Figure 1 (cartoon, one colour):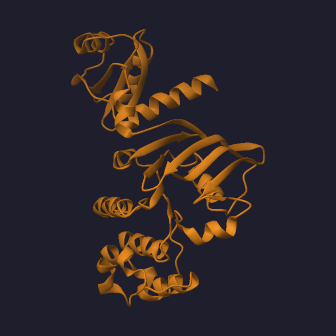
Figure 2 (cartoon, rainbow, N blue to C red):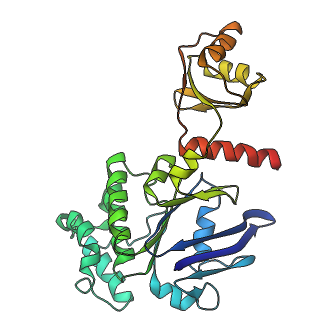
Figure 3 (cartoon, rainbow, N blue to C red):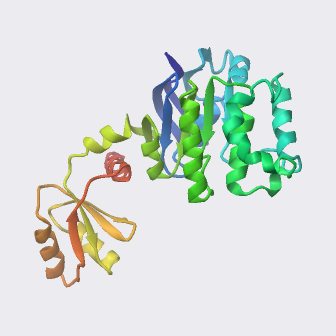
Length: 306
């Protein structure tokens, strides 16, 4: 059964569209990722679904309740972790958790089984003010506070932004365990590598959903020839490739360039073309697509249609 439903949701700020016709559904026990860069509309959508903001058009349901008509019921059943750390920084770890439990009419002891695996990492610092925790520990505390009232649905808005790589991995491991307890989780992130940790993802850009599917199916369905090109002259090589009649897209990708072509080609032909234009190429290799390649390709299509 779907526990989060968005139906044709749109929102604008001063006539500038933030969300355009957003529709999707998330099932019980599903970990759904909303993947997109800053400004794509992720936080706006979260605020609408958690009853903090009204949509201009469309409907939404969370835990079986309408996001406008039954907002009070929704607030009892969701855990919300905003992108910015918003707990009381001068209260201790234990005081913050106790405070949030009290707000929802429960206690730490009553729902301790939900947060135990996370809280044991915080327990050595239970008397430390929340504002003096490390970034990773702050996120763990925020997650505990979002869970302490035993929510049916969990909204996590960019929970790993600004957190070190090890803490990011630990955080996603914790989400996997929560999912196994039957909690539906909607998480947003700008990090494409985190997409593969989700059951399904929605790629979002400029307030529009580009695609919704499992990460693996998105990658499998990417059918354009893809090459990684290594060169010390990335900018010059990009300009050369973008003029080639075989190029669909040429984009910087870390320390190399990812080239998608309009026709099957062998790597040696691409290398020969670039070298003939006076640029030294270290390597050209066919590679498998990632979620980021899928996102960039769909974003290019969106720009072409705009």
